Image 1 (cartoon, rainbow, N blue to C red):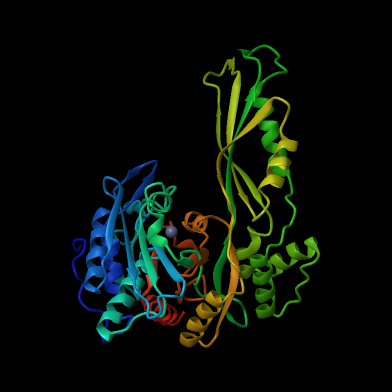
Image 2 (image 1 turned 60 degrees about the vertical axis):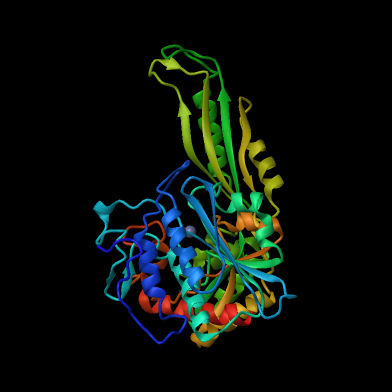
Length: 451
Ligand SMILES: [Zn+2]
């Protein structure tokens, strides 16, 4: 196993934007930047220092900013040819989720190449993107190229928890670093997906919001052997059962409508999006392509944590639960009033996290430039907007008025039996196809130079 930062030999050459990407990604994987959440982290410092050194080698002047000891972020600005144009932000996170080596085929932080794949934690989430950016910049230096517009690069900490040492901190403490940024690209889209007659490349133009609630039931404490009609546990469970059984209404947003229409076209199916029942039927008929939209045609409310009682013969006076609600753009108020109507009389709710949904225009020049860059490298590519069911650092950057897109270009095998891209992030044996990684670097090079 190589040490972090150690070269593994040149995999390809020629000085193009894809020449160094595999090696760079392997090096990044070898930095263990595990984020266990709640501030418990291996830290991003060494990875950040490596990134900063690479950027300096590419002629930039990066700054390393630590929100807390070892929680390092790197920001740099690439001067464009026309500085009057709005800037583009390119963001990627350096931290990764934990990996239990006992379950892996290869050590998760070795950065090994095997069977045409680069293996390791972070291979698709998202050291791949960080490596593509570094590789593109290295090649620009070698080729004497510069982008049309300013590009701000942010390699951040703590995305895999809540961003308090990363994107949120940068946005709160150093917003001036992002001056002039009109749009951003980051994780959450750009990968190849089998659409039937076409290869879809879903590009994130929206993200559902995050609404975390605590529900607390209060009742009368007492002996477990006696009848008690004011049992807090029962009140809480009944409320959770009502919320879980609630059928949230279909709410089609522009990103989801655009995705369903394009996926239906590619699959040769009619798309009647006016009728909610038709929307559910279409999602089902689209099969695998439908799974990308299934979680985003309506809100979801999922109970995740329960707390009550500590002894079998004692009725507790209080019971509480956490609810993970994901909201479509513009539905937070409606969602809260629905939840309130489902609460039992002994149950109250409080908001413990509320992050607005994100949406960027699904038919913008930014998106068209992404589509053009994909088509130049894959003639079968059909770029389609879509909505992410979960969240990314776009939630933080969008508060600066930046239109955030999920665009990490990556060509992957279309047959999930061969390679299931969507099972890779946070999964066992996370790996990225080497050809796909190189493809991504070439697409990113075109996009970043020409946008
Ligand atoms: Zn990620």
